[in-house]
Length: 400
Image (tube, rainbow, N blue to C red; front, side, top):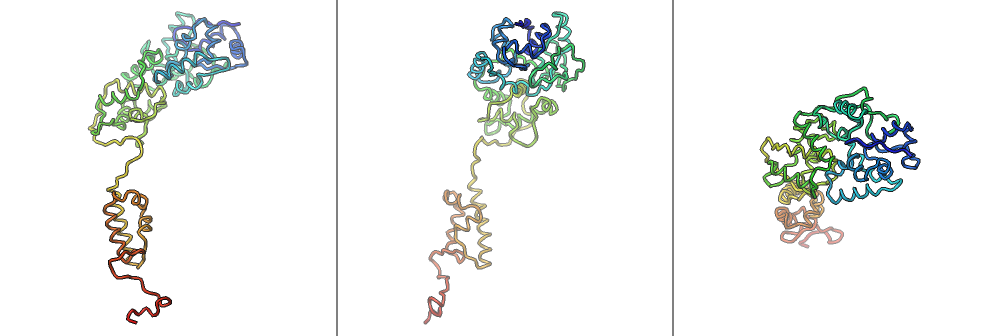
């Protein structure tokens, strides 16, 4: 029965498994099948899954492995405390064949297609331990610098998303082709890394409603409309200006022109959804912590979410104009039409039927219309316009 090597500080669980394969000489699939006592041939590089066998063979407490050697704490860092507790309990109670953490993988690998390394960390690891390993901090979404050395990270050609296989059982010092990440402004890169690492290490305060916290910060910075609501569109535009569209696209969080439902706007808008990827929380918190207020005067209005209220005064004026035009055409052609058919034609029948009191101009016009020659159902108050048909009333001569 193989024993897993002692994990190094901040070593991600997939790296522990890779080192175990190398130390024991066991092929990857055979190692996993022996550890899990099943036909399993793959394992999550970031979360491990089914932590019981791993903690037993690594000589760690389950909670220590979960919070110190997986990306789990980052994945739940911005969730409500109750949700964090539920997911933690589920992760620690996994049974054989049950992968309760799989649904969180997308949240933490949202914008990290390849494993990343810090060249200085590789040299330090080789000096201290005689081998290098994969650090959790280097795999965080949106992070472009190593917080320990203040040096840029590099991407390897090894895919991070999905599951680790024998074809990628390499250690950082063995990867030759390294590519620079998308650069970020010098003052923003450490700030993003600091918030991300704090989330990974469980150092962020537990907040019941984090979106409300963002709204309060945005209001304090001046992103407030005359109505008192948050200028969510301005927040989105300023956040994009600060980080740059190239970086936002690289991190998988682009902000496009035009639509009012860009993700930063939704994060500060009342009634918005709360299931945002952790990296979006990191970017929003970093942006608000910078203390940058709006650069332009905010004068636009904001309507609360929900069904748009009808402007009945405007509808009344518009309906009146349409009815007047339609009745003029009817008069010119000698056509007769009912009031209901007239309102149906101009698309106002339902609104007028249910809200007559809100259509005073239309109501007054229709009252006059019902006494006109164009009304099919004419009211009294003027000579009867129908001509008596000879077949029923004789010659039609009233003097007879």
